[in-house]
Image (cartoon, rainbow, N blue to C red; front, side, top):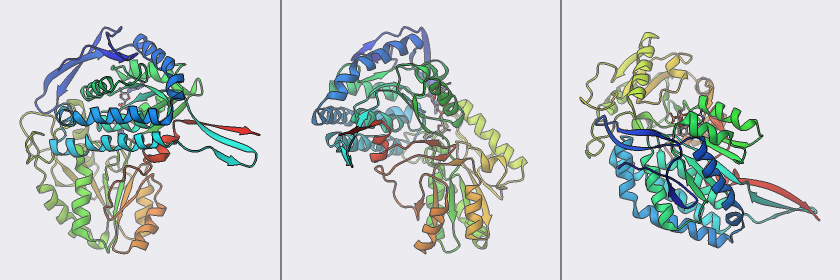
Length: 470
Ligand code: NAD
């Protein structure tokens, strides 16, 4: 599984940097591959090839650009099984979810942007002005490990559809799936330099990309702390930055909710991908009149979460991505207990598989809204539960966060649920478990980021707007 090259100028290229990244299987704790850790000179070479490719790609007829994205979709679809296996292996996502969410969702996103590439926005006429959208230029894309292909696709597909060229720096914990993407890019025959890959450490390759004078837009998904650093690097040259950052989303269960459904869906959402999901509903806010009833349903639901090998079909929850992530999550559970929260499921003493970076799915009840576990993003299978008395108090607790990425409301009264949804300061709210819509804009308020991904809003991020007066 070792890969020895980077990809730019339409070719597999030997790295100029001499470093190596070792990739681990978090279930077996074995090293499964080595990939290059590039350096700033690799970034220079890849950005130069993206810059050289930009005018021709930007100038291509819409139908032709769309046909390249369609070819990429075909090549990637042909590798779907291999992609799901690779993500289950390098990240630990149970195979069923690795296939349905981690693989099929990015394919759907790519398909959607191929269609948008074929029908670019028409120029707008406002008085004597003709208003046109033009691709912004060279994009630096920096992505995390938790949905490794989806987060790449949410940047690369709209950027290419808009007419931009891209240099990608994927997360060092899960680089293997990006190699499968570039196998598909090569097979699809994308013009040289349109899409380029430099693997490496964040502080080296990521920072060089964010600071590069020839990168016009930095599209970053990751933690709020690194997002702030990326912004700082890009601001020195006034480069545009699109940030998708952390979250601490609230799931508000009002007193008239269908409780069994709200709890089942809420727990599943919190523990999806071992809780390593930026939009995870990690704070469950429950009407005080139904609090004890809800805790009993939660404990019952969590009992059904079997931990284990991602390739075992009975497994619902895999390991965390790394030993460091496991220790971080365990530290938060201890902190929650010390701060007075009550463990009603899982916890530090719960039995976990002998090998692998497992943490038992854990529920902390009675947490104080201002406590560390109710405020900080844990990024593991830890659900915090808190009671509220009125709808207004639920909104206040939900909005008491530096984040504002997602959220949920449950009520049998749709008007009431909508009223709460309107009051949440977040980029998305799901009412009564409504389905994820990959064409709806995705992004955060407050420290969850700026800009939007997915759908037409996600495409717009990659445009400059020009007004021509006649
Ligand atoms: P991270 O911030 O540590 O790393 C993200 C990427 O940034 C990686 O590719 C990393 O190598 C790179 N990086 C690290 N230091 C850098 C630097 N100094 N300059 C430039 N790049 C650098 O995040 P992570 O641990 O990979 O991912 C988890 C975080 O991502 C969580 O906070 C999660 O909420 C967030 N996330 C957000 C979204 C969203 O859409 N809002 C989606 C998924 C994950």
